[in-house]
Image (cartoon, rainbow, N blue to C red; front, side):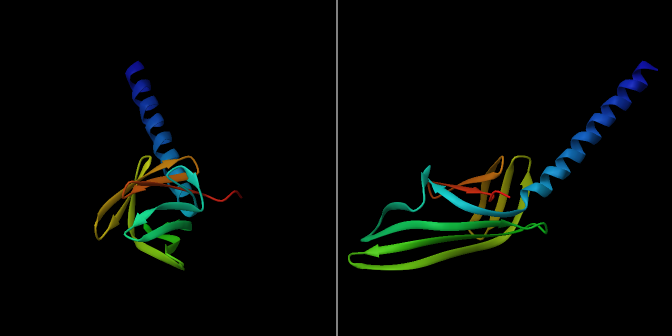
Length: 135
């Protein structure tokens, strides 16, 4: 009898963990705004790329319930006295693995950490902090 109670208790605990994981998986979907790059608030003035300076001015990350994502980065390029605004967009599929998101890209998988209402990822040595807007 005691063994049966332990087995049932363990099964109930596992069911609670699984259902909690399902609820938290749905919470990761939605839109996130880029808030910081390399732990600095936006706009973030990056280093030179040749004779051009890059300034990251904004961005978004959308994680959709169907397992697709879209990441957009907005930036200004400055070369001498000439400046122009530009953006990059990357989209594809993602998987949730506990407190991580793995985004599948043509150049290889990129992993991001889920930290509360934020997603943190490192791209080419720069750490990007995306945060869900306050409700």
